[in-house]
Image (tube, rainbow, N blue to C red):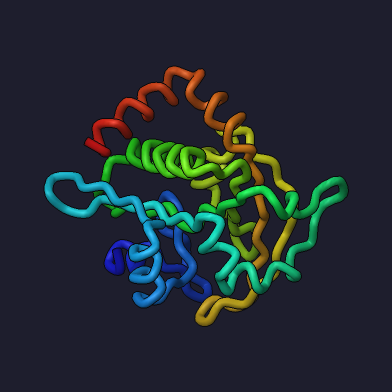
Length: 196
């Protein structure tokens, strides 16, 4: 995971790697997320080809990320979901440069399906919008009907100030919409094979 992350790292003035990039994550955090069951990994040719990182409601609400939610600038008509509903956060989706690009939607769908089966109704994700745009994730979010609901400004060591768009998906609707497409059905079938 660390090798994949390093290959997708974004530094000051760097050109984003083809297909997207990641903004920092220390090894200790990956270890904690693996321990909490928030990592879904896929192999290709006997090597780790990619991973998805999600934060289920209990992990999200106990996280540093949740403690910083006052930084969120909600767009008109949007705000935090009801406190009694389980929400999740899609933190990272990463593939090794040599991995099949088809693994990205398969991993995303498998991770979202697992969260829905765990009772989560709301799924949030952020995509970098300044200083550069992370287009790789926008296609996947659009396929699920995600709405751009807020912005967040943060500072990352080695990168500086960044502005991210916060996206919201209603999981039952997003999964229904995605699985109704031929591509979504193929990803779901591939995800079942991955889980086997």
